Image (cartoon, each protein chain N blue to C red):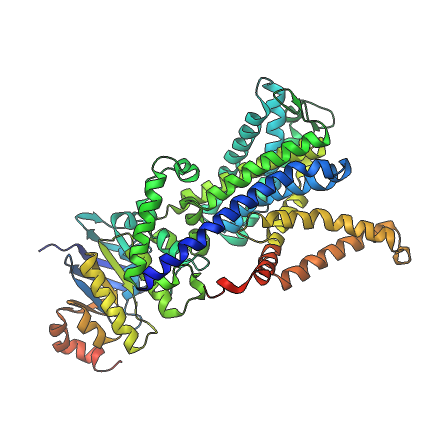
Length: 352
Length: 255
C-alpha cells in the first residue's frame, strides 16, 4: 500500500520540477547570451571570463575529487597541457577548426591524466595528493625547458595564433566571451550527463567506500583512471581557454602550483560533488581579491605600512575569509545557497 | 555430493597468528549455512577469503565448479558472490536507491559512451536497473526510504540497505556478516524472515555469521562451528546442538 501511495505521489511532483529545470536552463542560456550587452569590456575580460573558466577548471577537479574521492594538487599541470596542445595544434595543423582543436587538446590532457593517475591504484588520500605534485612539477619543467612546445620563442611564451570559428573572429572581448561561455555550457551538460549516469554512481560508490565498491563488482581501477582522464579533459580545455580566451599570451608559469591550489579552493569553497558550486567558488576566488583591492583604495590604510605590507595584508584577509567560510559552511557555498532556497520555498514538500 | 561452495584445507594467518587453520567444509546449493563461534574464531576472515578481500595462505576453494586459490573481489562479484559487511560499508552519501542501483553494477552492459550520451544499450540498462532496484527495495520493506541518504537512516535500516545492495544482483551465494548485530529480538526475527525469503524467492545460497545461537539454530539448515580457526563441528542444527565439544566450547559458556 505504501508503495502505491508513494509512486502516485512522486510522479506529479517530479514533472513540474523537470519543467522548471528546462525553464531554468533556457533562462540561463539567454542570460549568458545577453551578458555582453550589459557588461563592458572590463567586466567581460577581467571578471566574467576568468570566473567562468576557473569554474570550468573547478568542475574538472570536482569530478575527480568530489565525485570519485581522489585528491589532486596538480590540476594546473593538466591545464597547461591543454594550453600548449591547443597552441601547437593551431600552429602546426592550421587546417583544424578551433572546436576540434579544443577537443583534441582535452584528449591529450586526458591521456596525461590517466598516466599520472596510475599511482591512485595503489595509494590514497594525502599521499596520492602528494604524488600528483609530480605532474605539477614535471609539466612546468617540460614546457620551460623544451622550447619546441612554444615554437622556439625566446620568451617561452605562447600567444593565441588565431581564434576563429568558421569566419567569425573571436579576438574581441565579446568574441572570447562567447567562445568561453559556449564551451563551458557544453561541458557543464557533459558533466551532468556523466554524474547522472552509471559511471557517476560508480565513482561516488568508490568515493564513499572503495572496498565495498570492489566487492559488489565495480571495476574500481578502471573507474579511477577514467575519472583522472575525464577530469583532465575538462582541465585541459579550461587551460586552453585560460591561455587564449583570458590571458592572450601565457607561459608554463601561468599554470603553477598557485593555480592548482586556487582550483582546489574553488572546489572546497564552492562545494564538493557539485557542478554549479564551482562557479560560486570561482567567483569567490576571482572577486574577493578585486574587492579587497577596491576597499583598500576607499579606506586609507597607509598607516599600516607600505604597498608591499598592504598586499600581504590582503592575502591574510583572503585566507581568513576562506578559513571562516569553511568552519561556518564546510559543505561550501552551494549548500549555503541550497539552504537559502529551501527556507524561501513553501513548506509543502518538507514532509519528505 | 559436491556443494556450490567447497573449501579444502584453507589456512590464513596474520603476522604469524593463525586465523584459519586447514579448514574444510562444503555448502550445498540452496541451503542456509550458519557460521558460529566466539569472537576471533575466524568467521569474518573466512568470508573475506571466500570473496577475495583476503588471500588464503594455503588451500583452495571451489565455487560453482570453478577452483581457485585466490580470487579478486571484483571477480568474485562477477561470479555471483554477494556480500554484506559486519560494520555497514554503505555508500553513505548516496540515497537508498542509489546504493541498491550500485549493487547492480556487475550487470552493466552499456559502454561508457552509451551510458553518458544515453545511447544504445543505456536505455534498457537504466530501466532494467530501476525496476530491479525498486523490486528489491520493496522486498526489504524500504520503499518509504528510497530517497533518503543512507547515513541519515537508523542502524537497523542501514543493515537492510546493505542486504538489499547485495541481494539486488541476484547472487548465487550470499555472504552475510552479522546481519542482525545490534538488533533487538523482534528485529532479529524480522531479519530472519527476510533472509529466509531471500533464500527462497531469489534462490540465493546463504552463508551467514550470527552470534545469537537461538536465532541461528532456527534459521539455518546447516551449522559450522569454528573455534580458533579450526572447525569444531559441522552438521544440522540438531547435530550441532548435541555435540559435546560445542557445548563445552561455546554453547555452554558464552551468550
